[in-house]
Length: 512
Image (cartoon, rainbow, N blue to C red; front, side, top):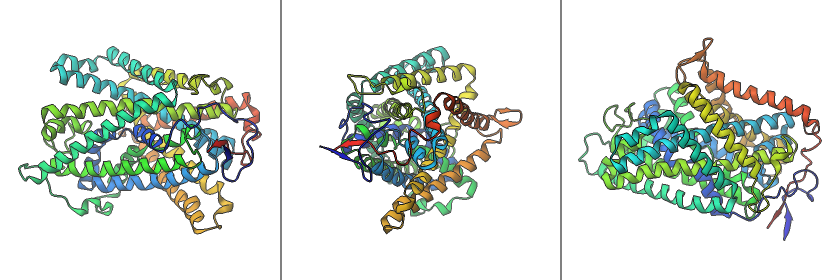
């Protein structure tokens, strides 16, 4: 039977029945999509080393600190989704709370962050693809193909094309692939953690260190600057869980299930991160030589250095497979939020109407998905051939976009429900206090990152007229969104006059 989301009447006007396939995903499938988008194995192998380099043995504590603002923002997403289960998520909610311009820029922040991540994931998948082939064949020449720029870019484009095709075929195809890839990631992490803990406790490793509860104390970090640097890395490790919410119109019980799935995904992520971090730290220590997690030569890919020592040659290959699977799985699921955000923006006249077209058979936003794939491929190829430094700095600018749209969404929750905050203690906490606190924390990280980016030494070390390239790229991408918004204002004045999507626009009719 059909029912209407909390606090709304029958659905009328723009955006009704966008055509997505309803009831395609359940609680478990939605949580799997959130976990996959985050790419836990890839995040761990690329972040364990840099985090130790900043905060030493307090790495587990910093992971917990990064989890806190994400959890608080997740409460905001859950409450907003209950009231307005719309695939536009941050875009739709912030338009209804703060108006068309703020909402449009929030949607732009999500879209551009996702394009950057997609291009990065494609690059990572390519690198580990050739690294794995080199391990399997025992050929350094095969592994070195990743360093051949034309071969690397061509392979990246092939990965992007495959991921686009799977996403184009809708949620059923997406869900089936993700169950296998996420199960593989979590299973390999579990095996790695068990073996690392067992060898660390044996006492036969000179670099291993004993566990201490002080590792979980964030106040033991040596300086505030080190703490904020580690925190920004930790926040990146949790980014992507909101993919659970962007498929809300395709989820069974779309008013409640996506929020529950997001919290379930967050619980799995923080648990796997803490266990793996503690196991790796006990096994390898935090030294700057050999397999130590503080070794700058292995910081970018810790699992490559620890695979054989922890799991042996035969099982160690599984870690390479898991990292490749992690990047490939996230590459595919990360198309979901960008395509559905573009779909919603188009349905509400904030973008050209062609992006609102739904494939009649697959019930997916086909035009938006293909556009996202093309944009990702062009972006990565252009940045790769333009300059390796530009590509690196663009990735560094990602944190700015993440904090930008997450914090705005958190504040939008408190403002949207401002008239309900006095009804009960629960409403006050989950609709007001927690979202505002999460928004303030992420806004603080945004401001601190913006300040640090000004320094040319941030990122690749390049600069433009004495200003850090990361700052120029990050701020430039936001300003590009403002310019595009002005062009769309002239094309779609009704949306920007607040005539299409307002606080009074009813939520989608959902199937129960």
